[in-house]
Length: 368
Image (cartoon, rainbow, N blue to C red):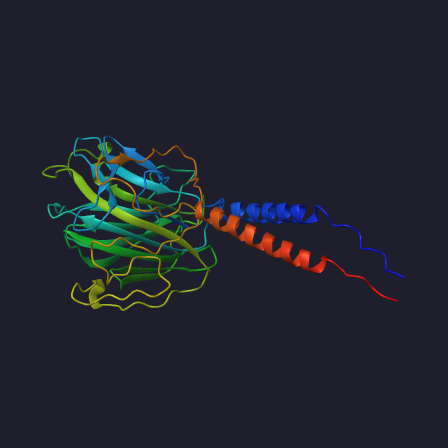
């Protein structure tokens, strides 16, 4: 007497292969898709296909991408504001950030012919859009005033805007500065914090209120903004000043856990980073290693959101970013994830097929 022959599974391996491949490809595409909010994004200006932030420009200013100056390899964004009587701002705008904690890192460069002026040129600011006014001050602003870097922090108390100015040391012309800002936004009941590092050395910090606690969470703007050049303020601050030109590169924003602090960096006295002291960045930072040559681009950056592109752009013809239209940033994820998912799907499906064949192969004759 023989046992009944097991039912045929013909066609099951093919269906199994198709199901596994389809499921894993779907997972791969999902992994490659960016999050809705731009809480972890990066821009290195290397690839023409990389989506760039929107621009906020008043007047005839420009933001163009071209060869990086100062011995730095690859591409960078050149920002300029002409002294024409009505231009005063050329900035890239990154919206969609939440009100939690983030690390902001970027590099900027002041050319050797930069003119010192007795007014602020804001090169990075965190701005909280308000419903009741269009002229409210940024909650946090990094600027160069005369020959020095400084940080201004604003918050509301008793219905009035409060201001704190933190000196960050002397500016060096013809030098790429690597900035890192670790910011936790305050709430009406919880204090916030700001830690600032330049070239891997802590140069300033703040604990307490650091925004207005109303309206939208602060968004990030980087480029050049001269409040004193607004047309309504007249020509008093324009005399003798040529156009403002600077360069920015390797912007990276990483969402961090609220209350967590990155590894501490060395701190110098007087709020100035020592050029002769070799800077050291913690391993958790997304900025470029300061020990690298100035001609080396940053290699570590978040890949969620807008991906850091490879250096495949010709170093010639500058390209211009898109203009701001009030929409939040939308980016596509790296296609490499999809390729990895496809390869993984094929490998796992083949493994499943072989296991299936092993379990359902020839059974042989069974005796009584």
